[in-house]
Image (cartoon, rainbow, N blue to C red; front, top):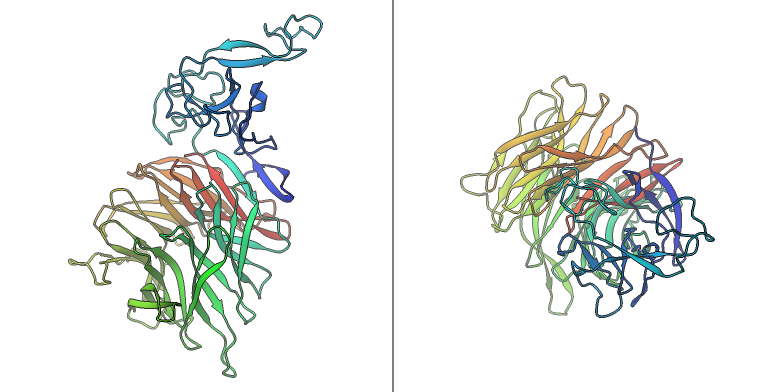
Length: 548
């Protein structure tokens, strides 16, 4: 187990948070309590150039801070807060870097020089050439330079190491909470859905945070029964607002009947958190209807994957809904089509994930119990109308050994229409479960390759989440068992299944069940994860961002 990163407590606008500090090559890479430059900020030294993400920059002769950007010919771009007309513009290749030497500094670098032995006065500048990222030489503030422009191979095209934690925060609330899903906001922050509170009466929530951990708004999901209400998915709507999926458990009027889960969907205003609409859909207890996976289609319709039925006898379910306006101007949730797939015996069949590709395929993943005690992964694709593709597109699993527990937990669609499934597979020796990754070539439901990751102990290792970037590279996260605890883990693979990098498993200070539950990749291919980290006596919602 790895010792968790050192912790700093930083206070932003009256809200206290905890930021993890990552160290790579002896350099501080995560957010530090440096001051962010105000609009029109004019610098006088390199020390004044540090943005809110914790990235150090250079002070240029025009008194503007610049930061590494491989899209610029010089390798640098002026800060968005620089004085006009340089704000957010590329630094010209011929512009030298300004290094300010204050009282007590020496332009010769002589360590014996003092304020009485140097002729330099405050504000004197010297010129040094810019670093050239990609020339194979580590220069200036580069942390690596392997001489190529390949991303994810250890040193990225911006001369920063791959897979480095850039920023991290935990909620630090009184009582346990955890993130189940994460989506990005336009300002670089996140919206998370999850669970909070002490068992047995736990509540769901949707909340928006800055990437530094400042909470903008939080909306709870409260059922009337003393049980677990939860938000499992948050996705961006075509309008830019937040669509959420979860479960709510309410008391039932029938005496002696145990309340069961109903699935819940809602839309929240991205800026204020105000509820635009919310619906609850359910079966009559003791049966239940649960939604675990959510895909939002370009027309605003939603496809929900889950399970329908009782605790020990349920069907693999998938339904397409459309939020429509009724004659009175209110919203209704209209069912377009629905399927409940039975494995053939009275057993546990369920869908966990659903994705949509640009060819119009709807791909659902989960598991069927075709033989009592033997749960096999199951993947199938439908067309836009909910009809099975012809010829059928289906992966029925059925791998050895029998009496296994093989499941698909998450799905992702790549830029060419490839589908990657993440989940777990039973070891041949039946000594535990391995984290499992399966690749389906574009337009097929046939596995092209499989990668499994066995943890250090004979326990349950699971990939709970997966995402694919625009280059086709795959990022999977989840947890590895250490025997009696779980450590959060993240790895990146190329399109052939070759592992590019993996982080050291993260063991929270509570030495408990630390997990990555959700992954999303931004336009800059930086990787944002959400889940939970433990501390003594508590679990905290956890969000972190990693370099590609």
